[in-house]
Length: 470
Image 1 (cartoon, rainbow, N blue to C red):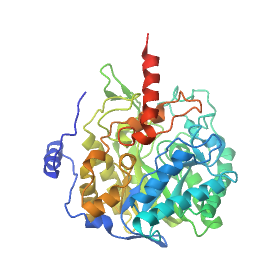
Image 2: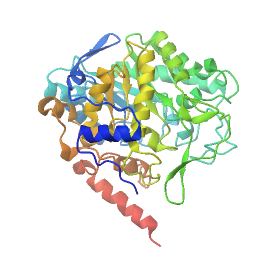
Image 3: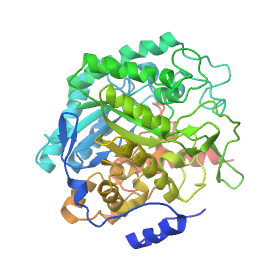
């Protein structure tokens, strides 16, 4: 098992960059991280974004639970001025797990309280919330819906996984079109409870993401670029017409890639594929291992024309090739050892996001992939901002370990090294654990948040030991 992160300084990382031939940049001047930025009609007070991360801790009816409230109070307290709320299903049928949050008429009052408690915590710790943007990610899980797969397209590389077989029927065009009303209803409620923006989620091979690459789907939502982007376009247009004061955002894959599997040594290897690959986004179908941002760039440009104010770029499918989305030091329990140096994965994130940002000057774009850099992530973020490669720095896993990192950095000029995410994948391991009375364990950071997740982690470990016993 190779262990990669042995760097004690920016100079160590710079030397590794040269050895690997990657273009990761660092700056000791962190002032760009604390500059304001205009997003649509609003201004955020700094360039830090808390990425959307599911806590898997809602009540069975989708109401945010006690741990959900705790997490967003901590995020509000932490000082980041863009809080990108986690995936929220637009319907019961679209939930990815039985503890995913759902915003509807029944849960709206609890969501309103969640928004207010997050903002109250932000004001108490940071003095002002007028320059804080707090949004919610609207999603339909598509093939990964836990009750029943809702399939956008037949992908031969994903057959036999997550309840999908070769006989699983495709969602019809009429069924897809009917989702527009569900997204609009959720957007109206989002505005009513106090969210500043909604993200129409187009990433990680959930429904709208999968449609982007559905070249082999027949009908009006597959095949051509115009058709593959049609449903998301219809949703954006309908929300803009119905809730004109609500900011529109999207978290979108810049590159899908193809699935990987474990070999005999537990190393990740790409699945066998035939060209042209019939499904996928952000690559040439004749060479799917190499990103090609041509279509993602075009789609971002077209989304701007229909009123999208903010874009967040991510990569891959967490179920099929987790090292693309989350470069890691230790794999999740159902995963494989990284098939590449994780800094190459960070570089992939930065280059694809930079290509989209450069092609869309003036558009606020959030970059991803920073957590692997640990205490040096601020230096990389500052350099990317300085060089115009991105507008905002998105931090995911590391916020679970140290939710007050922005205040730490602003006050002390550095992060607390004793609470830095080391990408051990504990959070992913909890998310993958399903042997719970509610069908899903809550997820967080057991090493650095023992108060909330220490006992949960012990319980999950005990289950794993029980499973492996002869």
